[in-house]
Image (tube, rainbow, N blue to C red; front, side, top):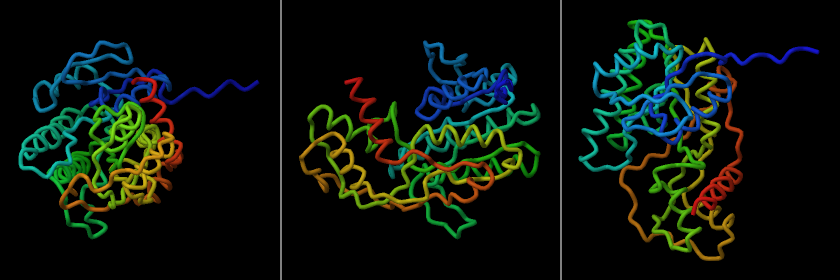
Length: 304
């Protein structure tokens, strides 16, 4: 009988920034299941045993360097950022410091240690290689700048870094319950009526565990170094269609109250160009949206 092939992650030390967040927590579980020794980073103390926890603020350059040098990871997954789609000027400084400065500090700390870095970006950021120049929010600009710095660290200082521009992630355990899927799901489960825009904007919805798998593959593939990949389904589904599906899956016969909330200005429709991730990473999203929404409803239903 042939012995089972050992996971390439067995015994490898990984550092996950933003490990207490939505994608980071699912990624940490996946890496642990693969046999990796996972070190998580959070600004606040975490009282659980899912990984080895470290408390750090990535906007502190000295503290970030000390953290990375103490862990000495084989791979760094950098997911920490200020995720806020608001168009208000109050988001300028938080997105600049937490997304851009935090990323630069992390990249600089990883430089010279021989660690692979896989960094989360966003499909919201403009993709100049596709002729895109319009940016929709301070968050989108900050993500674009952080991706630029990642490219700089690779091209100028040979840091082995890969960036994944991730589409609209949904799924169980999303802590920001102002996002449309957890917000509507919880309203339906509580018997409350949500406040909704007209919902005409199409978005590329990708299930959280599919995203975690893409991050793992990006760290495994040597030919992914120095490259930027879109991660999504490549398909656009209008927000109102997602809401309607949630109503149907929840067994609600009510009519969603579309148009009770004003539209957000400067929304840009962007969908993942999935071919490169498929060719290089061997990755495609595999969770159908109805199945992902069903799992999400069930998860929140067990907790309400």
